[in-house]
Image: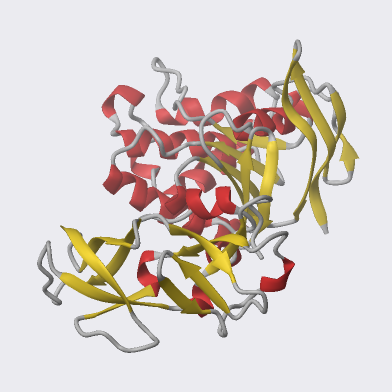
Length: 359
């Protein structure tokens, strides 16, 4: 069942088009993440759904109701902003209950909702404190709780963890996923952090310049990116791209003087508009050998070794191309040496140079 439906949405500020004929269907109980760089339109889309921006065209439906021109309070949504936006003079309990009081809920109902939200977010022992006495993570829990007490069907999150340090972000990310599993409400979450997107989402919508570039589950987005932009944006360390040509029968890829067999490729090589293509390979899909294997490996110069804890990132040069490979930290490599690469073609991607689409 569709819970949020965005249909042919346009948003313009004067002559500047921010969102252009955007369509997206979000299922009931789904956790959808809007991911993209700054200025791509993800927060703008969220604000349109929330009713904080008036759209220039199209429609927005929530729970089967056309809310395109409805006030935010009438849309059946709860929203969590990047800034905590807590009332400093009120206690945690006061912040959680304020919106309910303005909506004339009974004292008993307010008490029930506040206690229930505090229990879920594990902040019951903080109800008597003011925001100044809370850590950043605790304040964000209160901000989430303020949305939870509304008991709505759709929750909107606008980069709620971006102000927190790395450790707190990880902890609250787990809490948010647990919260979604517990409540099973529809959640739409905006972030520029791909790790948040990959770990939280049922589906990810990758945006660029007001358009959705790909809408799919995290596994598909990572392993079968729709185009060069998605492939380059998702993944840390990033994907390596090799400029080359595809053979007429699509069975081999050549860059410089090196040739790679494409027999295991999971795609349609023959869909290329020309023979000029890019081969995209993620660092973990490159196997490093110390000795050459004829017909399998390609020689590369090892420029830099970066220690990442349990893994090391090797920066390589081969046929004039810069390539990165992930290896086990226990395997020792020396900068300046020659190594031999084997590509996992079954996990790689070919992109048409002209259209930038994955083949």
